[in-house]
Image 1 (cartoon, helix red, strand yellow):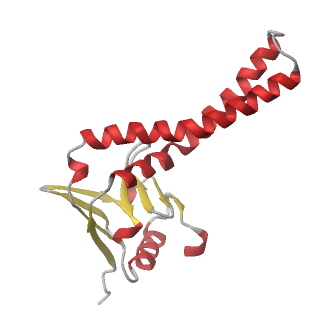
Image 2 (image 1 turned 90 degrees about the vertical axis):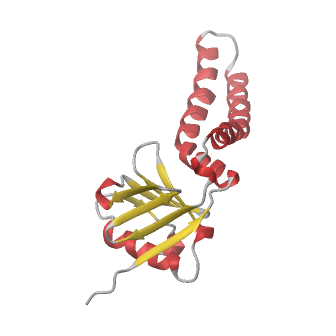
Image 3 (image 1 turned 60 degrees about the vertical axis):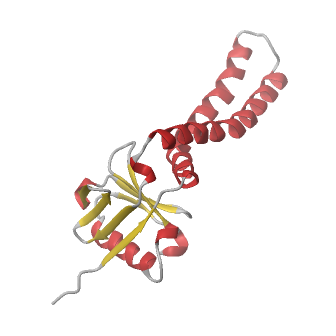
Length: 173
């Protein structure tokens, strides 16, 4: 009889972990906005013949620096407000990942996602993200994993997440 491989973890999502998730989640948007503003604004200034090429380039670089510094902290502030308003996220959660899918239990609420319900999976240094929609992910912090849980989790992902976009860290494969 085949042994059912699974990873069962529990813990609480901290405010810092939720902020980091939001930064990871918004990273692509941050890059696009920074690029568009850093290039678009100087091009508009050039088109209106307000400044010369040197000043426009310098303006673009300054705007890029300012946006790169300020947007992540703005995302973290917004995430902190969201965290404070969400009572469910402050409770202990139980996550079980196996060949059938992902089970998440918080208080008396139980949610089950089949592998076909998962759109993409991303592993970061601090967490695994199982995206169930474009803007919603199941957060599984690395600190919840003990002993060989991490390698078992990667095996389960590789065996079952065939149609999804999967990005695991290089050193882990």
